[in-house]
Image (cartoon, rainbow, N blue to C red; front, side, top):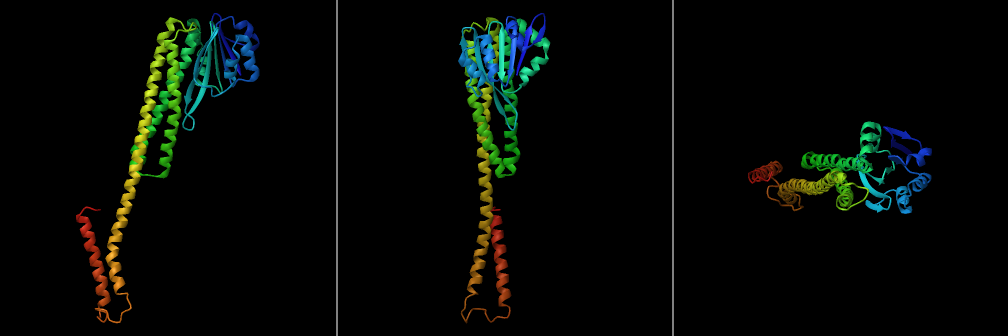
Length: 314
């Protein structure tokens, strides 16, 4: 689906059949779930390179910044909370007076801008590079919200799940977070490098007045990557804490079993001796011999328990 917005004494919404006429004005073309026919239409209307058109049509394109004679092509990744999190690619093309965004489904950064005609009008007046800045800035900042949620989840694991209980599902949660953070890390580090290109390289479609704004995004991208590293370190600490808690629980179980085994050993010896088939056993003919044996077993139990208690074994 293609939506067209252009500036002509205010923000106007255009129709697809007017594209050839409207592309002469400041224009933003937003594409959601692009089709093959729409790809060919944009390629012809804006003279896009065939490889650029192919990247628009493909999903999961790598992060990139590529300059062509009549436009600058960028691919960055946004993030949203969906069953944990979900990464999605946002393709952006800026030319002298046009800006194209492409994504597989509606994204908040674009949908909110469409509703705010005043903000969109100001960005049109500044130039297409400021539309690029606006979308990219929001998508980069969205990582902070997700990573804060991840950090809160890690804190919950450390404080409640690991320290109090060691259920197996907590280990699954930790490993899932670790895997997810590894995926985020690969993306944000590649993204940080490409954002630096916008700041350090000279592109004819990025004016000098826009560079401070892109430096601000680069600063945010660095902070995001640092935050990811901190979260990965925290999840590894949570994993170590979990394994330590499991080990401590196992030791507690083994200690209890060892105490029972130690107490039961002399009782077993006594009962085994008097369970033999010899005809003559000391005290076998004694009237209270059986009860004396039971009493001695009970006394041994209390002696062992008292001894263990004094030594602080439990």
